[in-house]
Image (cartoon, rainbow, N blue to C red; front, side, top):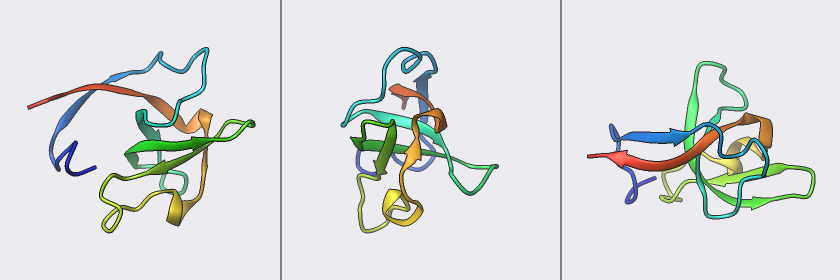
Length: 87
């Protein structure tokens, strides 16, 4: 997520942000990795389909592992919206 977030940055996450609504394009979210149960990803939502599938993209496209490699994730994989970071 460079330049917005850098390796080692700690983020503040709102886990209730999507209880009643779907993520919106542009939101930065924390999501469970679709294939690695031990990993979470921090990505920007690039699109949301009508059935709740989210395309996630890293801001540093040339270095990011995101929906271009692991596909769309269900809204249920989204753990929360990033609301801030600690410097």
